[in-house]
Amino acid sequence: MTIANDWQTIATIVACGVVTLLARASFVIWHTKLSVPPWFTRSLKFVAAAVLPALVMPEVLFRGAVAGDVLNYYRIIAAVLALAVAWRTRHLLATLVVGMMALWVLQWLKLF
Amino acid sequence: MQAPHSSTRAAFFSGVRDQAPIILGMLPFGMIAGAAPVASGMDPWLAMAMNIIIYAGAAQLAAISLMAQHVPMPIVVATALVVNLRFVMYSAALAPYFAKLSTSRKWLFSYLITDHGFALLTAKYKSDAAPELIEGYYGGVTFTMWTTWQMAVVLGILLGTKVPPSWSLDFTIPLVFLALVMPSLTTRAHWCAAGAASVMAIFTQSMPLKLGLITAAVVGIIVGTLLDARNEKLLAKDSHKGAQK
Image (cartoon, rainbow over all chains, first blue to last red; front, side, top):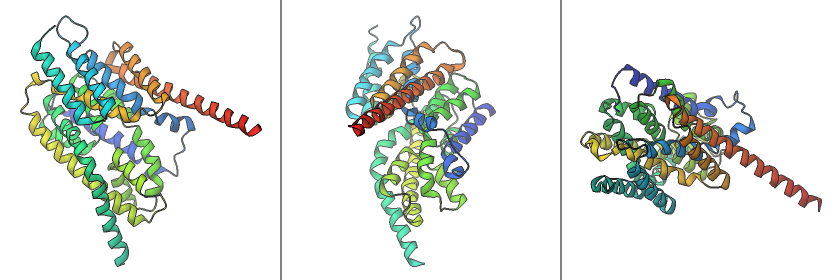
């Protein structure tokens, strides 16, 4: 599970940079030419709320599962604790500290 | 000529001051944007270049995770685009603010759009404020954000090369997303969008090429949008009834 330092990685980074810049420049540069349907504007409000959980789920549930298991229980427990902290405090550093500490303790204890 | 110059400068420094308290919260995010790619085997210089070229933490973390799993390039790029679609919304809101600026300045200011930069500028000024004030203030905010972000990235890169894989540093990626999603869950429709995307992400896990991620995100967006449209219709109906009485 490593990233190769080849032309393909470089091309991917550049392409990601281009689409990101185009998203940012879209209306600032072409506002006179761009007209989008109302449903599109409405849907943009939900991008963060939908995309971020979709990114979290596979990372937490399945990534790096212990051999023989489908789910990664250590990560699930650590993520639930971190979620509680994020919900209560909305604090990035607190969420990171609790989540990582929980994962390290579970990995160190190897209870199950 | 003296007056606009000095007001631009004053606006610049008030932008720096307003951005300053936000930096502390962003430091760990920037460090992870530097540490995560290096921990996944990316060359430190390439990781640095990535942060300058893309300059969008959430999209970068998503891309790093996919690249480490050898997902084909078009899917990585499409995922980054979906994560960054919110910038289209910011771009639309900021367009009237930047309308009077030169084209090169528009491109520079577009590149520098961040969640906080957008929030600070739109809170501080109306779009018909003097262009030199907008330029100064937004310049101060984004200059501070960009330089401190890149410094945090350098710190993260230095750290990432020293941390062994057994520390599971890649787990910081979903943790950052967990903290980022909370402020966006403002209405019932937003919670439903998040819930639908989460459930779909589990069921689409076995889809080839990590396409489940985009599928789940799109389903979540559709659910939120439909609920939002329905709520608005109900509200409109209610107010219509009220007017008839």
